[in-house]
Length: 137
Length: 156
Image (cartoon, rainbow over all chains, first blue to last red; front, side):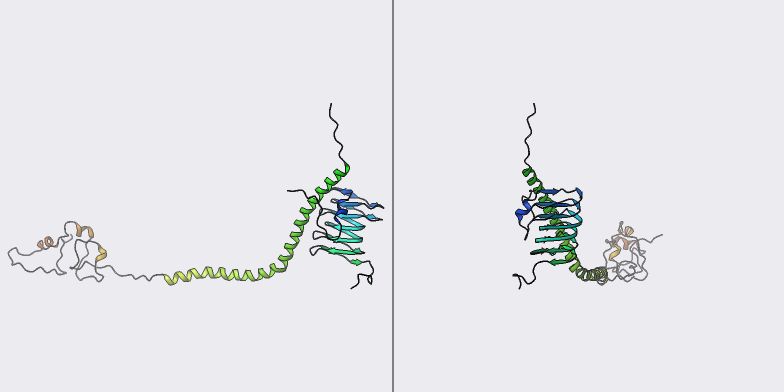
């Protein structure tokens, strides 16, 4: 089978940001703790992470199809979820939840959001932007 | 001496790890998504289809069980049981010792002889007629076979 040289098809999260991810929790690995940085970096979770992930500035969080993030608060500019997340999700720019994702918790976004019809979500979805802003229609 | 191993660029390693993870993500995500779609359609339409197919299948099965029996009963031929004939009639060819050629109604005073006895040298009625008790000098009378005259020797 041919190795894919590009990440999964995204609609909102830029592909180059997923390609620039520099931190990886591999499948089968269990990380118990929080991940925090003030730089515009990226992290991909294919294993299990029990803790928070927060980027003070920028940041890209990619939860892979085999990834599981529990008891967490995810906070970044771009959040792309393909696996399972139990906790709160805060996306400052774009939030994308694919058809293979499972989200148990609340999600909030400031700009754009996309949820696949087959995504499984149990929680609240909140738009934190200006309701009467330029995009009003 | 062993040659120094090339140092793998961290960026190359990172990209290779990412490509492998993307390949795995693609495979797992597609399978999971397809499974969810399938369960969705089965739950939405499968129940209705099942509720329609199950009674129809039951009716078809019952029909298949009953129809062959009805077809057999209609086409079965009627069997008539008749009594076998007592002896062959005079017009019949005596050489044919088959019991099946005997007339249906038995003739009076006739005793049926086995087919083998009829065929063994007694298939010639002219010889059998000569064995009948008749005076040799009597004028020749036209041969008339009556049921009382047996063309075959009497059984002991």
